[in-house]
Image (cartoon, rainbow, N blue to C red; front, side):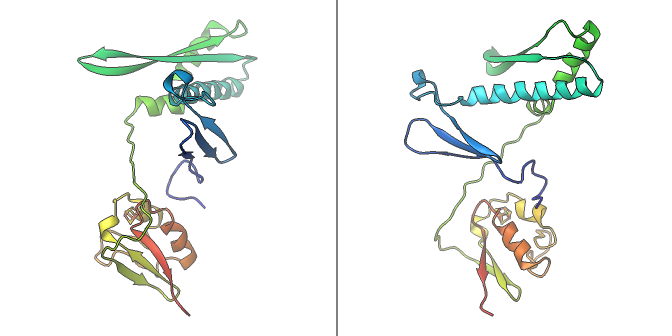
Length: 217
Ligand code: SF4
């Protein structure tokens, strides 16, 4: 199922317990640890968050350049990228600077290297880091808070909406506009899609504002 236009059907899930500072990170095909180095109080069991960021940029750069070189039939056996970062002060504010060194051994011509240098700047992660990046944070709430609730029922289920909990994430109406339409007064139409599809969509509400109550036949 494609949910909204998220990049991934399975989001990256990270969790931390009390074992400083090991984070378990689960992605669509496995899991690994992130941690902090020993001098920051961790055990260095995995890359730290800055290393993950630099790795993301390095790998995206490499994959993008490899795709381009292969498409053009260029015989370049190996490309390497080194990334590192520092912070500098600019107009009283801290600015993060990432340096990316691309190393291509002699197999490539100067013309190819110049072109690959341009391609590196256009890899998807470079564009995200250069562009307008917005991070939205939603606090998941599960539980028993007693708040006002409104029910919208079809013959199988009632969609329960608790307006006080809604964090206006837009996920419901971007994911299933046939059912959720904030522009109309009775904004949830439980007949707009199958009950299974509605149940699936409601699972993605981050705030707990939406839930499902199964109705007795
Ligand atoms: S998905 Fe949940 S939190 Fe987001 S707008 Fe819909 S009801 Fe509100």
